[in-house]
Amino acid sequence: MTTGVTVSCGCKNEENRASLPNLDYGLVDGTMLCGNKKDRKLNKNNTSGIRGVHFDKDRGVWVAQIMFQRKAHNLGRYKTKSKAVKARLAGEEKYFGKYR
Image (cartoon, rainbow, N blue to C red; front, side):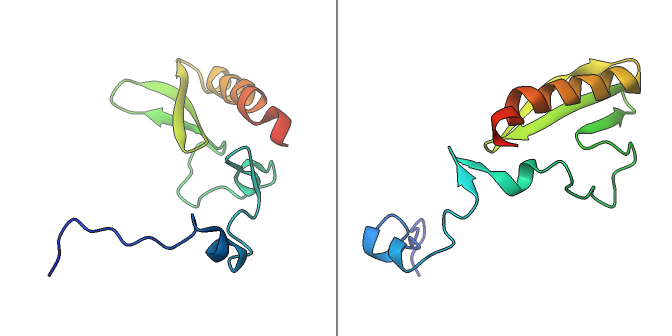
């Protein structure tokens, strides 16, 4: 039994990349375009009705956040849902703007 050993999928090797046609499917500048679609469905556990906006019960505020290039970006905490939605839409324009 070996521990601490990672086995590569081989995608860094050019010869192996040629046999994996969907490896870079939908990627532009390290961004997966299918995750940035406006018409993407909401998760079934979403209660606010807006992607990236949720209510923080402990603090009693609405939180706006966005994921971009595998990093979470906190867009702020707001007293009203409408302000959090505006922040989320501004964040989408800032981060997703050229990819939509």
